[in-house]
Image (cartoon, rainbow, N blue to C red):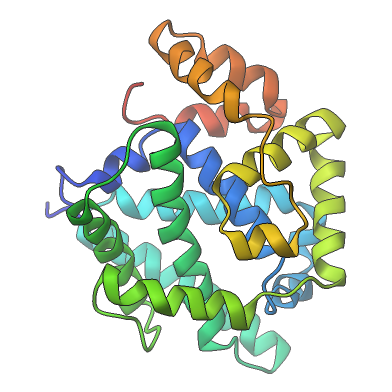
Length: 254
């Protein structure tokens, strides 16, 4: 079968390790709380009721697509489109095209930022590879006005952040729900992790410190993977109900 993402793609390495995906999740959780269209997920009630589970679901769909055949991936993408269509019908309004682009843009940015934090800098070719995968995903979802290349995407991404992000009552409520779901200690870890990967615009709106307390810990965590202690650390930091899901995220061995 033809894979949706070719076997040598850097995207498979990025989305094949749970620790990288967890940073993608952390960054997206921060930025999504600022998006002007976040009220759409409040409409269904699922996001405030289970914000961690809802974000894991989004990440899970993306990961499923990355490792699926072309046929299976396209079916999964079509299912996502159908789910959004059902929500639009229930509300009697259409999710803005820019909101779809914003979510896609988050997956692109945090895929790159998380891998570069935990592994190494990506080459220009690898960044184009990452962008191409999500471009094809967005094209299948009929999202309009997507730039053709990674380089062309960079200024568009910056413009979207300037226009589509704001701190609102939903922002503060979502972070409150994150804290309730994770507990005070894990919530603190989440916030410190977010500081490491979010863009300056997101950091400014959320009033984050410039320096994360986790920054000096990252090299130690990288070493823990060499001696196979990383799973124990993740088990300590993550809620029990998500441990099975997180373990299943590891496709590429550390």
